[in-house]
Length: 141
Image 1 (cartoon, helix red, strand yellow):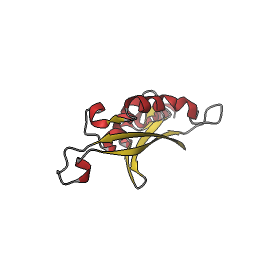
Image 2: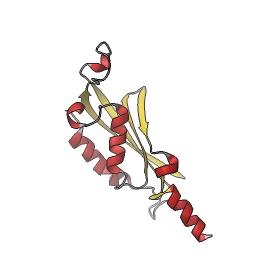
Image 3: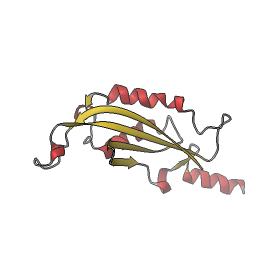
Image 4: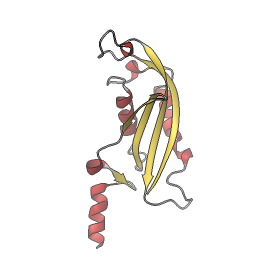
């Protein structure tokens, strides 16, 4: 199995209004976010790659246009937690990049939230769900 990752960064503010008033994250504050996308494949393409990193530029454009130097409360429907941001990015791109298996969002060097769908229900191997892969292997036997 081959796994690759690519990191993207952006700066944004947010406030977590659902937290108690005395919690520091309930107040307006910002982060220098790092977004890490992870792709996986059982095979390499004819160039010896899972995916050419340059083909991931759509993710950079999306992050830059939607999140960078924005107030996340204004651009996200859900509470702008790192967890919700990781899921939002994953769900936006998993059809474009079928080898995408996880998105991690870091708010600080010491904190990270990773979103990856449940393995047994939607995990993809080379663009197919685990069930599709298993069923194909059974048909090939």
